Image (tube, rainbow, N blue to C red):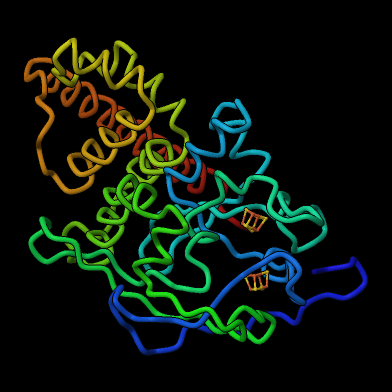
Length: 300
Ligand code: SF4
Ligand code: SF4
């Protein structure tokens, strides 16, 4: 428990032990109220959020995704992947979680995936054939966490169940697959445009803005989605989120599962081409003008 006077030591740079295991592994761990380190883990946070974490928390606060992102998160770039991520924003001028209270987590029922997993680390959800699940885990042992000294032994499978992680992992699977695909993709598809990255952020984290985009005429001009499907995804954030992952696979990796309106797509392509040509022509004219000025006013 933090009393405001003592601060827990900072976590080691990479506390994840190299040993990985499956969910049959039995670990010795228990976190309970009254333990000497109560709230130590929430006093110095580095919590990445999944799209489903954001959905749960924004629903809890009855706020829009935009408002939630602004108040409670900070963006970051995932290591070597050029993919946008989002982390919990700590309290102003501090390192503690904004949701931490003396009695514990104030958003416990909707706490993020990383908080649920701790002290287990989920290392991968990559599946070779994309039909079977194969996750691997590791144990995070940080000196300030006394839960490892508690006598309870529990398998990782039971710990995941206890922490309600099936739902969280199921609903974030599409997002993890996108990240893994991006990380392992070759150079030809390894450099998404700035617009694609912004799109990734909007679809994965700013679901209300994505909803507006899907409901817009601009979207319907390009994508030929059956009316009922469109209606279904617009009234269910979970369904919209899953559709978003599918949409991103199409935009980022060319996996076409959403029908395009051919005529509109061609028109849009021509408009883009025209605009690019105009910009290039204007830039060339500007360069020519600059050169003219140089010749007219040579340096003394
Ligand atoms: S969300 Fe809750 S459990 Fe997670 S770091 Fe914040 S206070 Fe701790
Ligand atoms: S036992 Fe570990 S997880 Fe629980 S409060 Fe202490 S530091 Fe946090």
